[in-house]
Length: 562
Image (cartoon, rainbow, N blue to C red; front, side, top):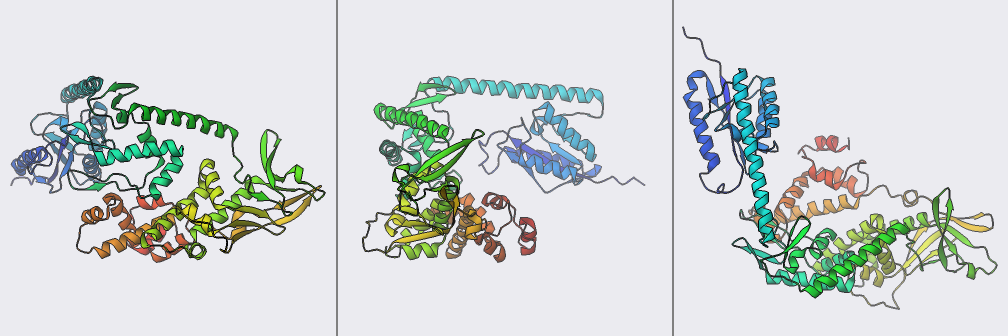
C-alpha cells in the first residue's frame, strides 16, 4: 500500500516593481500567479494544496521588505499556516542578500521552504546555497546599477530643465509629462504671494486665507479618489512661497536650473517675497533669543487703575518675569507686582474656555445674525483660537490678545478681563463695528491680594485649580464634532459610496473613512472627552490610529477608560 503523502500548503507570492500596467484586467501579477498555480496543480500528487489567498505586491521594490503582501505571507508562515512559498523567479522574493537571509531565517524556524518555478535550486546543500547567494548578489548589483542609472538620468534631465514628476505644484497641471499653467490655481498662487507682501506674516496669512474660504486644490487620481479641499497650513504656505518652480526654475538637490515650464510669478514679485521672508526669519530669530515676550504689555492695570509694565529679575541665571506698577505712576500707594507667567497663563486659559463654550460665546455675540455657513466658520475659528491661546507661539498669541482684550484689571480678589462683542467677532474673522451702547463683557479669574515687604502682590492660584478645568483636549473635542458631522453626512447620503460622498462634499476620502470608523465610539467615552475626563495620553492622533473594536466594553479597556 502506497504511503499517504503529507499535505503541503502552498501560497503564491507575486511582485512587480512599478504600477505600470497594473490597471489592466490581466496584468503581470496575474500572469505570475497563473504560472505558479499551474505548477502547484502539477505537484498535487506530492500533496501540494494551493491556498486561495493571494499575496501580491504591485508597485513595490524588491530592495527592501516594506511590502504588505510579503509581510502578510511571512506572518502566515511563522504561524504555521503555509509550508511552501511559490515564486515565478527568485528576484520576485527579494533583491537584497540581507533581506534574503532574514526570509530564510523565518522559513527555517517554521520548517517551510520556497520554490522558484522557473529556476531550480536545492538549498539543502552548501553548493545550492552558494549558487543562490551568487544569483542574489547579481540581482542586488542589477538593482543598484539601475538605481544609479535612474539617478543620473534624473540629474541630467533636471539640468535641462525637465520636470521629472512627483507632486504637481499648485498652479500647474501635467500634460504629456510637462508642467502647464492651470490659470485658476495660478491666480491663487499670485494672490497668496501678493497678500504675503501686504500682511508680512505667514501665520496671519493662513488665518486670512482660511477665513475667506480659500481651500487647497482638489485633485482626482486615476482611480477616481479625491484629495485636497482642506484648510491651508503654515507648512503649505512656506513651501509655496519658497518653491522656485513658480519663477520657472527646476531644483535638483542644492542647485537650481532654468525649467522648460512657464513661470507663474514674475522675477520682481518673487524677489520681494524672498526678501520679506528672509527679513522675517531674522526677526523671528531675534525674538527667540529674547525668550518669552510679555503678552499683556499695554493692557494691564493694577487695583488703583495705574498702568503696569513688564519687569524681570535674575537669580542664579534664571530669569523671572513680572508685571509691576509703572514707577512714574507710584504716588504714595504701594506698587503692585504679579508673576507674568502665572497671569498670562490664567488670562489665556480663561479666554480659551470662553471660545470652547459655544453656548457662552453665542450669548456674547448674539447681536450678530449668523447664517448657517457663518455658524460653521465660528465653530472652526473658535477651536483654532482656543488652541492658539493655550499652545500657540508667542508671535501668534500677541496679536490675538491685542484683538481680544480691551484691558486687564487686577482687583483685590480677582482678575478682570474686559472685552466686547465687537472684539470677539473681529477675532473670529468678522467685520464688526464697535457699539458704544453694547454691554461690556467682563471675564473674571480668582486671585488673592497679599503684602510682600513694601509691595502688594497678587497671588494667583494655579489655572487648573482656579477654573475646575481638567484637561479638556480641544483636538479631541474637534475630532468628536467631526465624527458627528461625518456620520450625519453619510446618513443624509444613504446609498452612495464613501468616494462619491467625499467627492460631493469636497473632502478627503481617506480621512472621511477614518473618521467614520470612530462613529461607533461608546457614548460614555464621548461624554468623558467632552468633559475633559479622558485618560492621560489619549490624543486625537492616537484615536485616529487605533483599530477600534465594535464592543463598547472592549473600547473602554483599549482606550484606558476601564
